[in-house]
Length: 432
Ligand SMILES: Cc1cc2nc3c(=O)[nH]c(=O)nc-3n(C[C@H](O)[C@H](O)[C@H](O)COP(=O)(O)OP(=O)(O)OC[C@H]3O[C@@H](n4cnc5c(N)ncnc54)[C@H](O)[C@@H]3O)c2cc1C
Image (cartoon, rainbow, N blue to C red; front, side, top):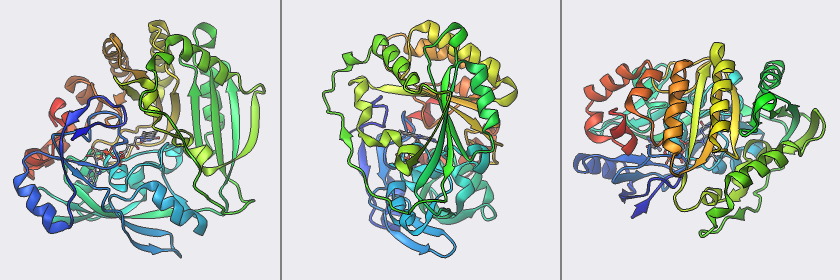
């Protein structure tokens, strides 16, 4: 079977195993050799790719829902979208959600995903009460913030390299409506963007779209969108129709010219410096999910998302240098998203640290990896790191310099023979 993740690069031949029950999975782990869990393939690069995949989507049962306290117990293959359909009309929402709801709970834990409220609520693991993890030996252990802590710290953000997460209990956030009061601030340059983030840092959700091609005095101009759930409105929540991008979408439509045009039009769609409006959950949290298979606009060679984070003290200078290098390269990105992050957690490989992170999508084309190598050097110079969940090409040296707890992670993997069983193309490249 030909498989890939969201970036459609690389594509590999893999066999898949959809276990029917724990016993079947235990037996499989004894004989399969190297393998990795595959959730819904929404990671961008090669973290969920190996020649032997353990697919989890068949495990999508709701095991329990304590509607009174907002505690949900689900199997690992349940999508966040499936959870929202059940909990939102009952007045609950996810405490932490990424920019797509089309990911599994197992994938959310393994990447320790974050959302627009990291500066307030931290990563997905902060909302995880406990989960069952199957180790390479077939033994199942319960992990939480207090039980089997080192497995918990290694698995949240551990990219599937410690075992198979079977099911999880998560705590939810109470909401009284499905309406978000959104404020959009139009900024003229990077300094104004930083000032706006700081000014709205007490707003629960914030994210900025940056014009990655603006240069000179306009470098770093952006639209900062922030907001919170309204207390006025209903809990009405329906599935929306999605537009589909066809398989043979002509990638020639995506050129530096069209990216420049898009960036200009997008930035100028707001005429006022500050605009307030009411929007629904899907528009605010998951705008890209409205277009099915939007990854196809990049053509058959695929694309990658480059996401890095810099500590707060160096964020401004670092972003200035990196945005200048990107604008000068002529390789623009439609999607350039800047977020403010709060404190780092105890997980060994979780991406966030207190500071700012930028994520940019780039079509795979000649010269791209050379550009990204030069951006890596800047990320390291300013004390930052790269997000594994988006990555497909970072070197072992660059990765290791960003993640100071890597030695602990490797030691745990060795001790429990996880390194003999769980491997992805990414873990091979990074020698995890
Ligand atoms: C449009 C879009 C927007 C996004 N926005 C954000 C964002 O705002 N913030 C953010 O943090 N991420 C974001 N992401 C990335 C995405 O949330 C993560 O990559 C997530 O892990 C994908 O989950 P998945 O179920 O598709 O897992 P996959 O992509 O299939 O796998 C991802 C990793 O999880 C592991 N894994 C999956 N299931 C299990 C399991 N049961 N047990 C053990 N390991 C498992 C895999 O081995 C792999 O290492 C976005 C992705 C897209 C496409």
